[in-house]
Image 1 (tube, one colour):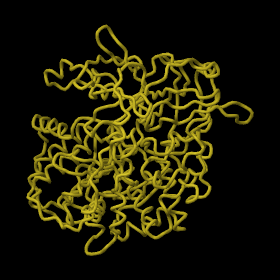
Image 2 (tube, helix red, strand yellow):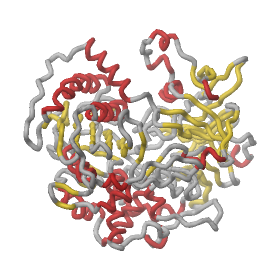
Image 3 (tube, one colour):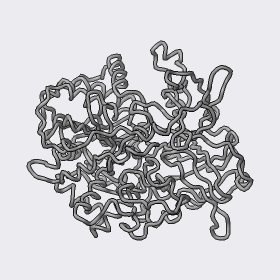
Image 4 (cartoon, one colour):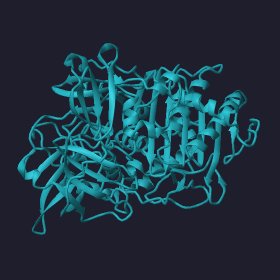
Length: 636
């Protein structure tokens, strides 16, 4: 998921000030409606909003090195705003347009969920049946009670199956996604089913495989026949490799052109689409599956999709999910209910949001990786302002009329107590040590330190800096690593929930668990003897994993490594040895619970992790390693 941050409009206000101080070199053209599939379309009532936002969008593109961006805003059954900004391909000077095609990453998941639900409606799939009976050959090792209920298709759809988040080996390769079923035979479940939301691309690869088996049709071909063609989505497809043509936006990273890699997990991340196509899909969903007078999606599928799935799961706190989508209430000012999904792929970023009660939908697509700091607040700002327009009557027979208000989670409060914030925590931001320091607390992240102070209602957080008090925006370098900067913005609290001592963050989207306390226990001798450097024996050429180490950090056993295609930072994850041959990644959430095993391979003991095999090469711990977030670079 997108890391928690400040409210969306704050960024646009900051960009507004920046745009005022540094106006674009060329005046913004006056808004005008232009009819055409590849050009802009703006209805008259949206022209003032476009005029106000255009310089902010251009300033954000310049500041955050986003070459191209396309967006669409719809209300009920019509498009209000459809336009591209900047360049789809700077080398060829191709402009970003309404039908420019982007890799949209995890916007694939809602579509895969719709395809699964369509098969259930036809009687070919029962989403409450065990995955093993629906997809023969599925098998996953477990370290939990074997009498527990088996994993169901519904749990895959809602990310509550307990599967590992990813299988890094082969993720960015030409390996077909149908190989995931066999690859999981050697992997362990990360969590018991329905313990906690654990985002999993692997689960959606299994769902795509299930659709392929049920339809006896290749998954991408079935999506084309069953959804894209009936909806008229002429620029949408599932593709493991991008189709290079004049409609494709070229991905970028830090302003540089990024050569796209092949992708294995097609049903989870392999969608290519345009803003114009996503506008059509949004209209169909907002209009109970009807588009241009035709019923293209059964309303019951949409109702099932937006039904909350996890109200009784204590460790999910306020997070609410449907099938293939996320559900929020009042997270956007003026909106009752928010249905959304985002996508963050190598070289691309996407944000898709529907407001069912208001009949509004927006999508923003960009050809720059990790551009969520722009696309998410932009999408929310467009919707917030669109809600202020004089509304048209919304038909009473929309699918939202039958939808239920999100239930208030109660299980979390029944077994919850607040605890003193002290100790080591395995978090989404890395290993954090919260320690007493004279009359205060400090948070230490392996060489970096942040002074903490108490806040009302038992929260703790960073003390305001001098620049905060003056209202200045400090230079990023002065705030430490990216993860320390994120930590600086959060309010934290430690609680015991379901017998687990967890770290809670107060985010704009509500309270979220970001970590779990690391137990105080010695590292077994067998694992101490394995400390040092390891070399991957089966690397993926386009996506290397380097500097793999088993090491001790503050007396805690850790696995550290680099994924240089994603980031120059070192990723470091605390481990707990459960046997002399297997350790698990500590914490809750994405990548947590994954197993690091010692296995025999060709007569030698090798380290096995996320599909990789590694051999020891000697060396020693690097005590200066930074503690980067383990979710870095993986998309939602």
